[in-house]
Image (cartoon, rainbow, N blue to C red; front, top):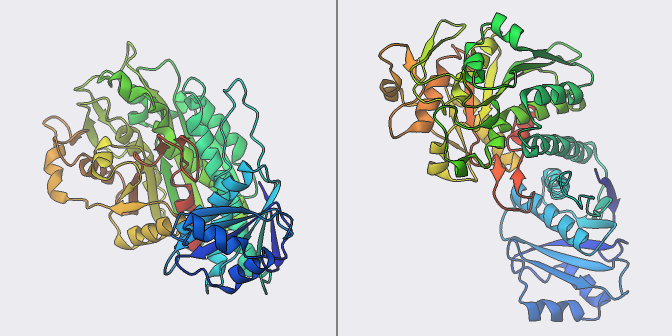
Length: 492
């Protein structure tokens, strides 16, 4: 991670390879810009006029100082008009990091806002700058990491290193490695990232005060009657694993939260085989489990006074000679039964095990994350995840946490009338509904396994994997959900 420095200084006195200045739309006559233009003998104003830079959100202007300032380059980043969101600051930090890397800068600096809640802006800037530096090059023949800046200085005239500012920076620096871990797990080839691999990684990274990890093999899974996980695993040569990660605070816990993540390491669809094009990115189907493992790994550094238990049922879903068949019936530990009509709707089958198990512990909240349905992607595309909940205060907390984290969530209803669509003629329910409302019917199936516990289901099928590069990361796993979960947990 980059070193973060905090300094009381003005833009014309900061010595750095690159100094980034956020600029509001059509506000080019501020004291900072006037002072810099005087030092640059009017060249800055001329350059802005020629390039028609106004400070519109997302715009950038790079200007060399030709030795007239301690900084080698100035970078002006438009942040738009009005109140600036945390996501805008996050992208501002990312832009500054990328421009610094492009000119080969070893260090860069960024001027902090004078807004009232500048600590949150500082945290978002640091987080964005960190996330923009992610690389996954281990399978490239020329896979050496690209040179990146080593330090970021946050500055402003009169800036003091307060406890609130340091806390915001520390949280960002704790969160970013968690996101990187989730991205790494998703980006690994499915031949590497098997259930055993996921379990081994959980044991490797979930260390520190208060953390413990249990990994259940197939024999223990059978003994615990996790019938859904065993059923999905039947077509595979790889054994399943059930990962349980527990965090206990040093003192008495105020709350207990259960986090459940879908861990399908590769989804072929089973006997209900997917088209080949649809399988190309199906290593992403364990992104929910990756997010839970990554979040749990961050907890010792956060010093929370809440108990958190993570559950990750994991296997691949393949059409082997003993694979489960359409028409099979699964009986779960809580007595409920599901008729399997489509083996490609397997995520809900393994999540049902984990939800039922977690519910026995009677936590205050249960939150599951899963790349569960293409139906949700049809509704809201690749940038937005869905949230379903049986408890509106919990949903509201998660929606606020996602907004603060810059991860988009949209709530959909648990339409009780749609339960008719999942009724089975031979079991309590079937694992698919009708032609429409697939994200809702999938959530309704999960709801049958949570009892009276306050529960939320996050369908992250869209944003868990990026098909193209963005400011905050390259193509591939995004680590979606880690930032939202950490915001939620730290805000309880």
